[in-house]
Length: 215
Image 1: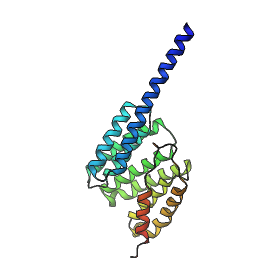
Image 2 (image 1 turned 120 degrees about the horizontal axis):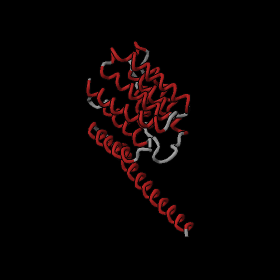
Image 3 (image 1 turned 120 degrees about the vertical axis):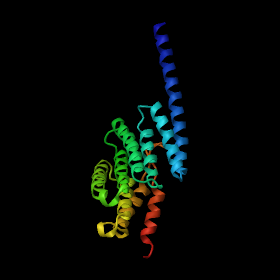
Image 4 (image 1 turned 135 degrees about the horizontal axis):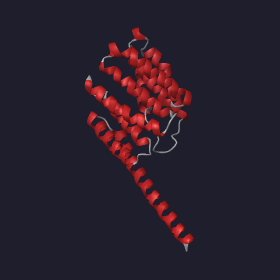
């Protein structure tokens, strides 16, 4: 009788865990779809909020925290200024640090940390470029040491070079080979699951197109 009760208990726990997993997967898929279709600051902020809600319910999962950080840092490129950028970056940093605590030594998480630091430059490019550019570059080197085939490493590095003035070591000519490396990595890249990061290909192609345009 005890063995039967134990078996029933294990089955009930397994069914409950499966139901929770299915609910999590469904919520994540729908929110990732919203993220992929986001175009405005409000779109990204609303999607970040949804990921944060999922993260607060699924505290052991790193991906909702990761995507919340991604959506928050994306809003920095959509008209935010000064303290608004820092506030959103603080929110993104808190989320990606939580992801890091759940999934240490993950290349994707390091890329996102680099992007958040890069976004802080926009508060004041002249006074912040050297400091946060160096921090971001160092974090990308860590990401590359973990997984040198991650295409988002080279997208992030190439993007930084593309938007850095030529007089400060950037420009299209320096960005182009880095972005080409990103495209090459994308051609071989397969996400671990359908919930894992799979963004950036379109933007890499856009930047490369800009690099190839005649001056």
